Length: 394
Ligand SMILES: Cc1cc2nc3c(=O)[nH]c(=O)nc-3n(C[C@H](O)[C@H](O)[C@H](O)COP(=O)(O)OP(=O)(O)OC[C@H]3O[C@@H](n4cnc5c(N)ncnc54)[C@H](O)[C@@H]3O)c2cc1C
Image (cartoon, rainbow, N blue to C red; front, side):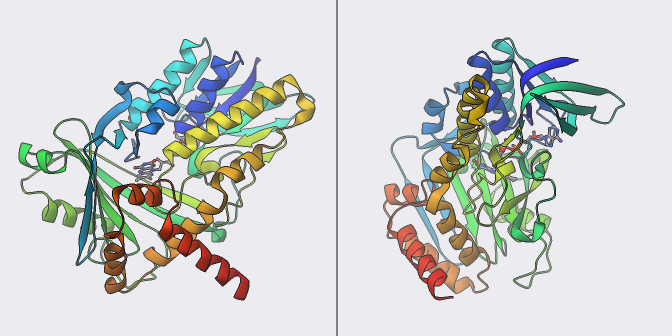
């Protein structure tokens, strides 16, 4: 039977980054991914900030486009901020995951595509892990000192039975479109968001650029199974509406994809259990405000790698302080964003959503980036204080 220091389940940004860091540090690692290749359900819109490139040493080959403008439209209003400098990137999500997996192989470690985690049993100083071939009869059993649950919203290893009623369910669908030169020029360097009941009740729509001539257009809805705001139309209706109202020329669909995410209110997922440690969406690292998760997934992957290496050297440390490290990263900002999420996406009245956009007009570009991407700033603090007040008096 093959034996590894660490088996990482899931080759998303969290698992890929964790396995890459462990492999670079000399650990014996296996990265397991249930999809046969990274083009299968290439679901993430994958917008991020420039700093992520340097923080994680990423090459330009994983970037689909750069952006310098953020545009937000509500049903009756709109606001935009345009910078001289490029502010961020939109990843080619498949290329990003493939790059991280290739880095694992370059460090001499193994990547197993097309296999799913099935179960594990804890033994003396290692666990026995059962893997099954996706859509086939293949089966592998391995020994691992540590298992990393990086299976994203599925939480396959650590929290498969987490109570769904404590979770916010959000579903997004997206089309990758080949568009005319005219439409490409209009949207090529912007992250555009569409909020309000006209665009997507209980959620938002978006247009993000990809490689030349291609745009990602999508819609996502929070509390996906609940009808907090009366609406009858399908996701597809709202997606087509953005395409029809915001693009000037006919476009061609290159790829369709989507995914349902689960975020645990209060981030109550178990972070560690026995020899299993969780990272990324499997422990609700995704930020609930606009569901930005790649940076946070990669950060948790790197942080877990540091704690795992310490554990491999000195097992009695037992992932000492991992949960505290994660908690101090998410800390109060995630709670404030949970509050904001519930305020914005459960709001029935367009007038109040328009008012949010009007309030945004008072923010400088830096303040907007601080609020939307660093989850801090004047507005966030005001909301956070309201949250404390609510907690204290309810
Ligand atoms: C429509 C949409 C748009 C988004 N847009 C953005 C954005 O613009 N910017 C941003 O930062 N974030 C965005 N996100 C969120 C972001 O993509 C996620 O937060 C991020 O991908 C989480 O990374 P992860 O590695 O934790 O999980 P995932 O990326 O979900 O990776 C988990 C991996 O585990 C594999 N897996 C699952 N179960 C098993 C199993 N049993 N065995 C083996 N493998 C398994 C899956 O196939 C998958 O490859 C978006 C999400 C959605 C749904």
